[in-house]
Amino acid sequence: MSQNKNNDEQIFALFRQELSTAIVGEVLDQFGLGAQFLPNAIRPLDMRMTIVGRAMPVLFADCFETFSPSGLNPVFAKPFGLMLEALDDLRPGEVFLATGGRNHLAMWSELMTLRAQRLHAAGALVDGCVRDTAALLRMNFPVFCRGSFAQDQRIRGKVVDFRATVEIGTVRVRPGDLVFGDHEGVCLIPQGAETDVAQAALERARKRSDVRRELEMGTSAVEIFARHNMI
Image (cartoon, rainbow, N blue to C red; front, side):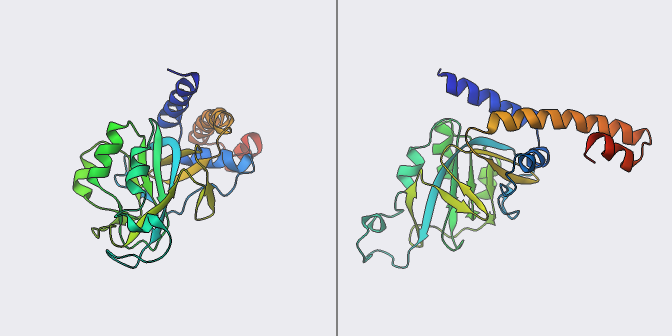
């Protein structure tokens, strides 16, 4: 097992077990990274889900012809574009992170989940809808999305690129960025900053425990903020 993989597993465990997006978001602000949350419409399929892993960005595009596509891009002649190749290219600890198109189709499904689980992926996050929701909820695999919608992607959208930089809301997502999501949101931590962010977030979480105790003892909010610079 490589050192990088060991480091990732330790970082992933720390985020999953010790941190929340609320605390991490406060730290990102302190680091000058104030626009790292994805749109708040992207939620876990189950509120108990947490997602932590490296982003593997996938770019969708709308298509408007069914079986006889015109144009010069050979990707559009394939049933799903590059979706199958993107799915097969998932690596352990990665998050299939998809965006693009008009949100009029299901970007993730039960069968895609089975393949991703076999490849030891960390989860799926789509800037759109998923299908097969009942099955997904039984599969113990983190899925974040905008909602459920059964309409198939085959004749409506194609994956046109993957492992490419994409943009969701205000966030530019690069391959390898750290994806961290829970029931209160999803934030992206630029690759290389995750260790410093995690350490600062742990310190802030401990300080928050001190603040909580002081509030329970009746200390005023003004006094607490003056002492800890948080409330």
